[in-house]
Structures are given as C-alpha cells and as structure tokens.
Image 1 (cartoon, rainbow, N blue to C red):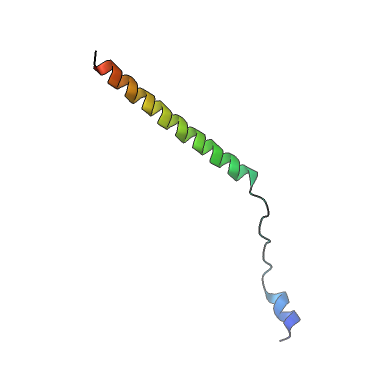
Image 2: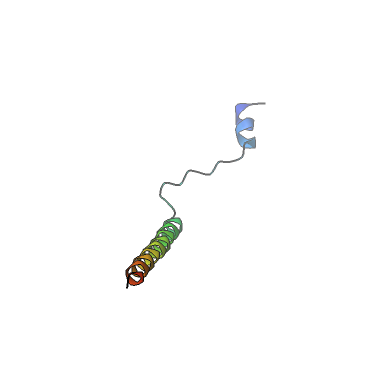
Length: 55
C-alpha cells in the first residue's frame, strides 16, 4: 500500500482549537460567581448568628 493510500484511509483529525470556547468560559465564570455568592452568604449568616447568639 502506498503512502498516499494510507494517508487517505486515516481518519481526518480535527485541528486543535486556537482560542477557548466563549461559552465554556461564560459557564466557568457563572459557576464561580454562584459558588462565591453561596460562600459569602453562608459566611454572613454564620457571623450574624454568632453576633446575635451573644445577646
């Protein structure tokens, strides 16, 4: 089998993406925002509970 025939039979490889997918970056940022909000809210609730418990 010639080199040309072998090359033709190989599955074409998709080129590697040069830039990150904007949708994926958007989802990552959104997830980080949600997690940050939850942690911040939980911390605020704990502090408020500790401050109110002393009275």
